[in-house]
Amino acid sequence: MKKGAVNKAEQDIAETDIGSRLKTLRKARKLTITELALLANVSAGAISQIERNLTNPTVRMLEQLRLVLKVPLSAFLEEDRFLLRGAEHYVRRREERPHFNVGKRGIAKEMLSPSGDHDMQFMYIRIPPGVRSDEMLIGQGEKAGLVIEGELTLEVGGETLSLATGDSFQFKSHLPHTIFNHTDNDVRVLWIMHISPGQHL
Image 1 (cartoon, rainbow, N blue to C red):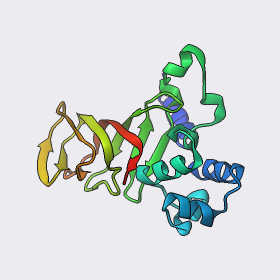
Image 2: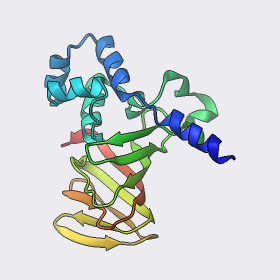
Image 3: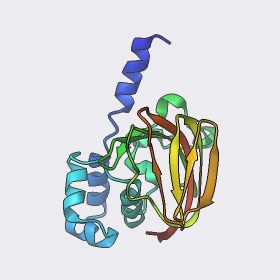
Image 4: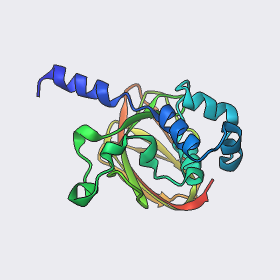
């Protein structure tokens, strides 16, 4: 594929509009921003900023919102036309991956799980140099990953481990944890998680 075509495709996918989808879902349930904030334990100011695309929500925040709104995570990330059935329901085509940024630190994610409501989610994460993850989703379940490119510091349950390209990991997700790019280059990770609905912090 020509370089220009790839850039155009990435540009189109990068326009994932979490804010307008959150607003549509909230209004469909006849909730005010204040009501949704109380139910999801998220500040009204944060919801307002997300809806206006002034800030990037963390995955933890999206999880809290989706549980209240009773939708899968993918409802925030893609249009209804991608919510497919039949054989395609089990597949995520490369060109249909939703791209989104989380938090304030520039961590970029691509959803790899097919659309719909799944107990397990997996995604492709890019962590910029010097960036530490914030507000990690903690709860009953497991998380795992594979370092595809670069070096990464993984902190789990008070222990610190240095991981290199090709290293993999897995741990119970109730343990306090964070990931940190201690290098001067981007780190890319295949990230997998399963956390029981309603059992997270």
